[in-house]
Length: 368
Image (tube, rainbow, N blue to C red; front, side, top):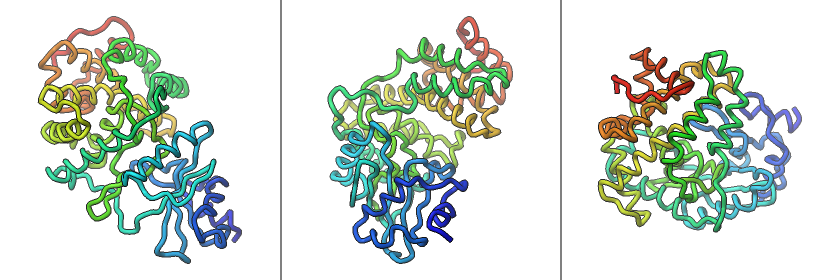
């Protein structure tokens, strides 16, 4: 079996490992001599524990059983900034040690004893405080003055994704273009635009626990964004298997937010905590757009069930902006959970949500 066949065998979905990833093996000290041999294993790193990443790879070899590395490929026109930010995180002990880099890739030493975080373990007080402080330290790493928001779920990014799945959405009776425009008009002005250095995909599978020491991996999306982008992703990943019924309680999220804000040097009183938690729920809708579009692009059957949650979530948040009781419910349950309840237990709400996204704005929903 040739080398390329051996590499292909080690990847998910029978996808070939890019030549840049194979070439990056030579950046590892002492591995040049075995870089082209069959027993060098390169596999795509998992995202959400399910679908593989196209930019981060795990490197190992039976000839070096005590060693393992991650290889992060650098996107065109993003390499310099990403490398600089990864170096900052690594120097601060927030990411794995860099052992080599080039214009094409970053190679970091894997910790053999490290394991991804287990969700329920991090609902304990001390561990939750550690996690909050860790995320705050990532967000405290300086970004370049004047740096624009990094790509992921900016409005311009979402417009492109919505365009790609427009036909599929309409087959299900939904016009995501209109819904995105309504979100931009009614909710986007209320979102936070201040930028910090964010992980960009901060779920617990991208956080390693090595004897109580946390480190971030999967850094391919590292870049400036509003802090709520990371927090919305993290809170959902603290649920069991992404189940919204297990969304962290408001007490858990409030404790996290209090410790996080204090570590950031920001006000951490009850009002500030509530403001941050509500801002996270506003940002969650952008994450929902992103997740639905990606699910549709992958042809996943559950995408059709996810679509009604978007207009229901928008309707819920529009009301919460002017109704203290609705706002309190959003803080208590999370907007995803409320939207899911509305679309599954109250079918009329789906029709009302569609009305919201296709015509005049609905002012109130009796079930909220």
